[in-house]
Image (cartoon, rainbow, N blue to C red; front, side, top):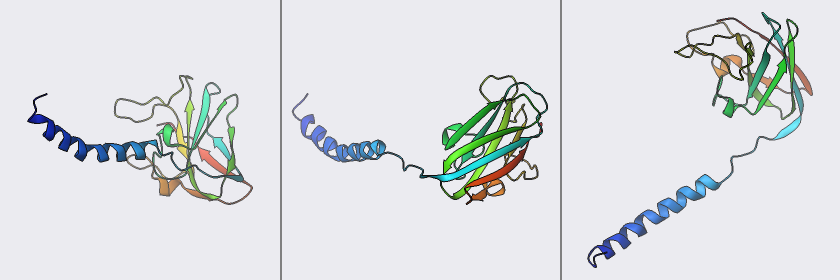
Length: 160
């Protein structure tokens, strides 16, 4: 390296190094854990149109990722269908506000099938069964407060 560029390189390194260290420190810090508790949420799913496939439920503690980003859900439960209703249980929950998304994976491919604009092709539903509107349901329309040791929520599936 040329002698003239060496001081410039050192100055740039000093400026950028703290920024890189700061980002690394933030990235390495763990996300806050969701506290577990003694409550169990029981989701009763109605409206299964076929007795094949799997019913999948996602539990969200906030609007982040709701209703479809599985990575943002704090719990995921699934059960094979065999009847016109299904029941899924979410154990060890702390009291708080939650919302549930449910879909019927009819073809058992492990995901909610959608068309090219993102509209579901398989039956879906959310807690509180809000009236359909343009776009996905909002967290505040589907949210409920969990406060009992065992609390039931009914979700009606609708075929898009």
